[in-house]
Length: 113
Length: 117
Image 1 (cartoon, rainbow over the protein chains, first blue to last red):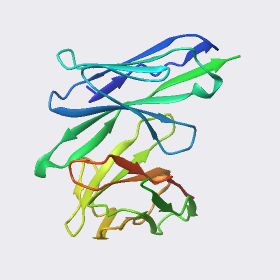
Image 2 (image 1 turned 120 degrees about the vertical axis):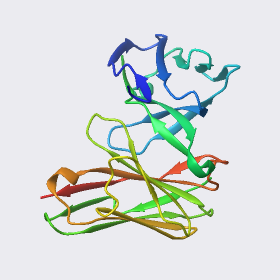
Image 3 (image 1 turned 90 degrees about the horizontal axis):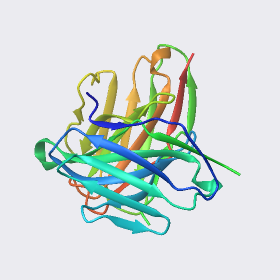
Image 4 (image 1 turned 45 degrees about the horizontal axis):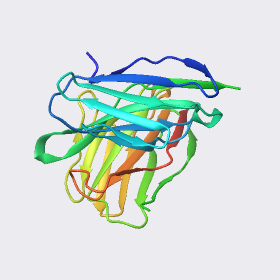
């Protein structure tokens, strides 16, 4: 079983639509959680951290359910520039108390005019 | 903000040769650096974690003698792909953190696209 699982998509939505992505993780010792975006052939860039209380950043809302080991990202009023791959990422602490980021496969979003 | 410079951005090498990739933190001291590999349409896979002055910790299935990692200073880590083969062709990305626990976040380099011919 993959440590972080996402539906790869692609999700094709019209501009202005609301779209939601889900992610599950298997390691209950995961400490912190993030959504990154990765444009084609580029490095990943942090979109937002995810907190248990839920958090919002403009059109983006992230939720974390530790009991279900489930993370979500909601995008409202989609823009063309939202077209990219969204990576669900967890930070797991291993030996020596060193954290390491584990990435999901990514979910591809294509917003169409 | 924190900046990590990765060089070269792309490299083509002949099978059997070695390639060195550098990762530098430009405006902060990176106690911990990470090396990832990404195949097309796949996720970033962590290869190894290195703490400054210590030997790198490799993930299961990653050959430490093939992928040599050096983290001799707080601003520089290198990954050397030894005796490269076509199957080593991939996108390699480094990431740096101020602390082993990731305090302050993780900053990524822009990646190196390696093609072995």
